[in-house]
Image 1: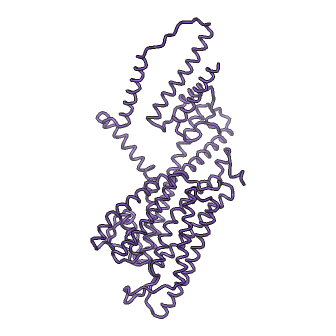
Image 2: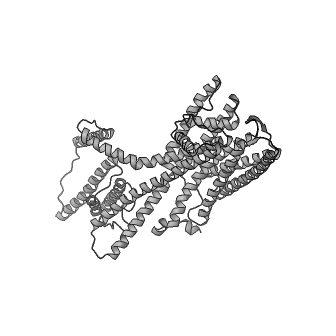
Image 3: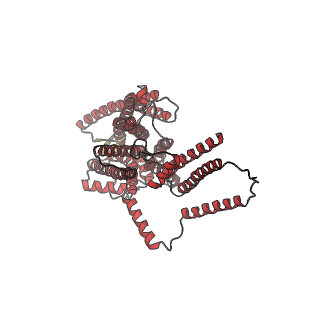
Length: 543
């Protein structure tokens, strides 16, 4: 088991199951870390608000009191949910060991979900009994929040269980594969849920809302939808709303800015590497079965085409998957709202579209307790989905349009455009370099007395100096490339000069090809040239 968790070698890195499990290992903790605080928010609503509403002539009359054991089990479920999230975050921070954290989080999430399911089933039985007795009753946001919480708790426990299965099968070690930026994102999601929960408590007191309505009001405010069905009516509420909304929007902005760059970056990179490797191996097999002789330049060009093809396929494949997921989320959400509110499906699609665009005319608003509870969950899930979709659009369609317009602008306005900041920095860099070179030349040179040496020794020294100068000149050019364009791709001739300077030969389609992986080539070449210069000077000094 230990040996399998520490895989090395080409076949292990790109083996299908290993790749998939390693990719999921970075996604599962993010899912649990994001859903956990949200589930706690709904759990608080389920505990604070009574679960049944007695109606009179279709209007609210009073809340039906919950039993003591219902409140007790509900409170225990909330404590278990908080414990599960605290253990998960403690593991993210390195305070609790992985195995202990997994046992606490998985067990607490599942047990909390089971408790809520038991309470929900009992409340539904009581609801049916009251309906049979002729009492006009309906479930409140507390009940629907409990339903949502039980589903979210189970989902958190399930993804953590899958993560544990991957560890037990030896696909990754006993820790969550998260970067520091991804851990920060989890803290930001926790902050925004705490902000919603705290704001719900404040505005429920100031405006005499139920706690569920207050959380719904805070959610609509922070997401800048502004449906207008609930709004502040007192001066104190308006005064508190201004800083509350501003801070909430700032926290939400942090979450949105990090989601597009952090949540999908690691998994997308792994999938891209896998696609490159499959295309490379396929090309090698095709060439092995073909007797036609291929040059090194042919291999180099094919490897370049493989990277380009893999990147293009990956971008459009990811875009297609995200568009499908977004449409499912949009249309299924509309279906739920149509059932809960009694709208036509077209009206529900129209309502969801306006909310996703944060327009919020207010002509359609959720009015039933179930629709309000579902809206809070749906709108919070819409934030990452819309962000990820926009990120894909920027990389593909929007990116293509921008490149075309930039090219047209360069053709039409080339003579009148002002230098960019990058051009200015290049001028400054060249000016500083020139000044330093002139200053060095103007300094008095040391007195070197002529000592005649054998001709073969002079030739050898000249050759050594020439090689050092070649390496230094190459490093100087690469430093310029690093400043101008870190993602520059070098030509076959430039790579050949490197190979000649290092006295090496590269198999461009082989496992040791320096362009096998999509790395920053200026940084790679700089390291290779620098190491060669260091070895060269060290050997000269020893001689």
